[in-house]
Figure 1 (tube, one colour):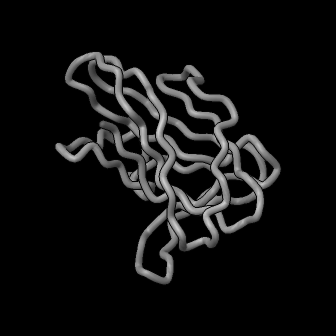
Figure 2 (cartoon, rainbow, N blue to C red):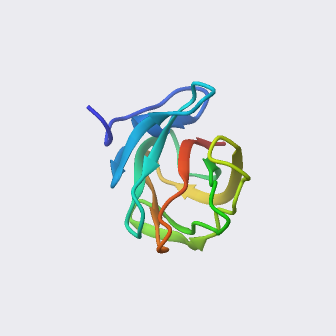
Figure 3 (cartoon, rainbow, N blue to C red):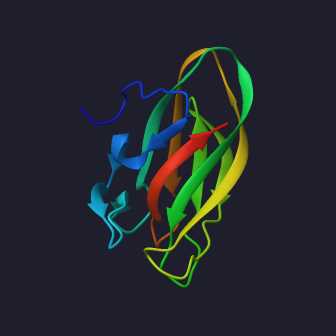
Length: 133
């Protein structure tokens, strides 16, 4: 079952292929990395369920690739509330060239939903994983 599953572990890493994908699918790049690829346009994205033992401020790091020459902005939401609007996911130089963007988030005790959603015409970048620290 994909998405809405509790994917927890000591590492705090949540793979894109474990997420609920909207307008997307799991693919593999030339190096063998599995990732989520998305159709163009706004609304594409991924959602993870993240477990937290206590309420906490945390850092969300999103690993992505953007082979286009333009940004692919996305909204970031935690537990249904948008915490970052239109965050730029800048070009990385190629679809197999990965970069990471990080931002602060707040988690509550128990299950939390973390959602990234494309807002621009170009759609979402490729997503490899999120990490929460």
